[in-house]
Length: 363
Ligand SMILES: *Cc1c(COP(=O)(O)O)cnc(C)c1O
Image (cartoon, rainbow, N blue to C red; front, side, top):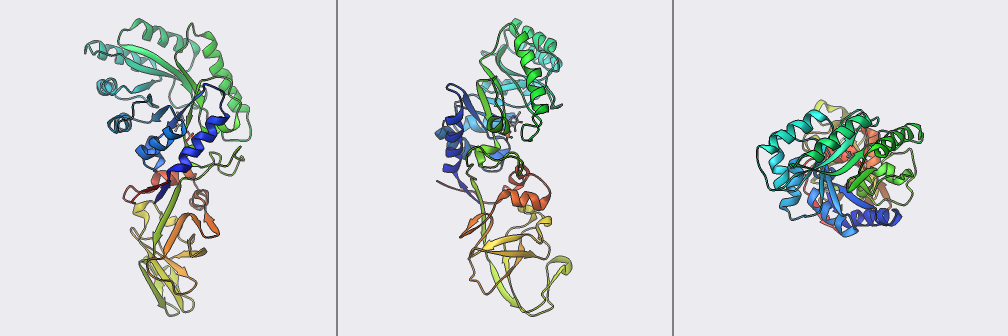
């Protein structure tokens, strides 16, 4: 796998150029940077002007801290109470979405007499139905609880949209309205107010907030799939390439792969590529194509755990590059096409590409 770090830097720069003066961009590098490699993505994003990061759990936050990143890091999830000391030690901000957790956290930390307070972002559930406070009253109570406590500190408030990537804006507006009501009723506001994921940042006029949580678009992928057009060209960062490790000519009527689901129907050149479902190149990719010397070549027979076979137009030398995602001469396989084949979204494709695939970073 080749990750083009300059694409990430450019996507961040291009987005920042559109944001109002002073609005910050936090790079979402959860799930190992959507499979791209969290540390390298974080570095590329900071070079583009990202001033903070979002991750999904403590381990991911600690990984960034241990690599030397000292920008603000928000964990977009609640963490186990017993792990809160770690959050404070590493200066990681935690999301809180209900009062019970908040009360338990306050009680736990009070007993421990740590030097710093736990930094919190309140999550408001305005219609995602996942985590978050549901009513303005609940948020007001949470704020009061934090402000009364010496072990807690209020750093942010946010919400998350369920339909920002859709053409119909009705539900998005309803969620925004609910969030606005919460903000208007609060007696004071924290340092960060953030509502934008990639889709919101690209396609909606968000009047509230001084930071965005920029994820998928930073990797150069259109959050909406096919539904909406990007306001500026996003540059895909990930290229998945392999090479031919065996090339052979088979007679008519030979079987390929487990279950011999493919049988040559004439003399055919068949190539073997060392990638399989254990790498996240799933069995449903049978029948899809890869690129060799700028030509589409069908994946024939079942995808194995570690290998797959393709039908070549003619004899091709061993070691020839095989492109599974990305450009090869004049042709291209976008990650979206792989998602379409699998009946899913490119977010999932990027995340399931296996950790055993070597990642190589280039400009
Ligand atoms: C993952 C996540 C994001 C990033 O979403 P993208 O669609 O990748 O931009 C933003 N906010 C929250 C709460 C998330 O969980």
